[in-house]
Image (cartoon, rainbow, N blue to C red; front, side, top):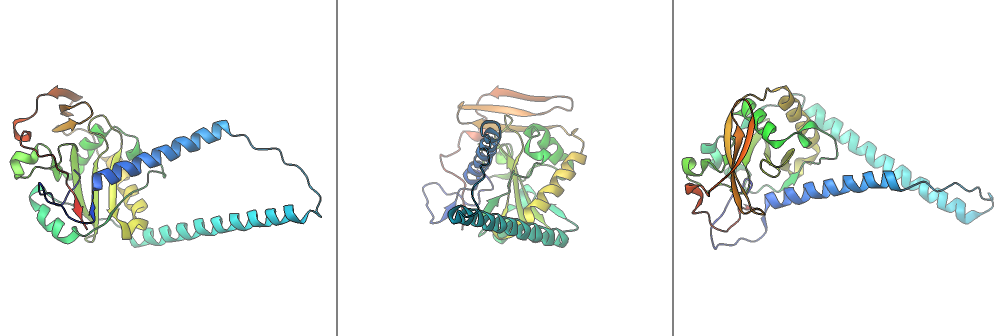
Length: 268
């Protein structure tokens, strides 16, 4: 799957993190929360306010409790905003280094013990809604070929992640690891982005920077990817030919016939 860092058929390791599943579950939770919030706005109507005697001490106490809760929430938001502001000041300039396919081992040596956390999609960004095929073109324009994709299996002599179309591994400012991959192959929108959990306060700034770079990059670079859709039980060849995006059904590629039924896991 995702930047799965270790995968040995038949072997098991304690406390292993299935990163792709984690990112997908997190993205689904965010979408569900957004849908629920939008539904609440359209179906829930505020109750009329009824005046009550000032001598009613119980109601006054409820009002005081509610005010304290609002103040706690306001203080929490202020603290979070201050934290993000400090993070933004620390990251005034971002330097992006993509991990090339042949340089995966050094990345894994440095970040194998990382616990990954998905970047939130609650703050709207174009890279949450743009078609993944177009985002792949823009990523290629900026950073070249992915760190991993299914087509690289034969070239780089590793299996890769047949159920993920592409993976980009980055190191930002020399110390911040970042994973960027598709959401649902050629049928998805947006990107799944994950960073080190302990650096989660930096993610809004990093995501905003990546979004700005992708929007500025022209979508003109041709590419070809392969994607295995497990629900359809079908392989697809997809990409951009320089003029139009395409997705077509294909037989199982020869290099993919030896895939084993195991998952790529990041071992903590």
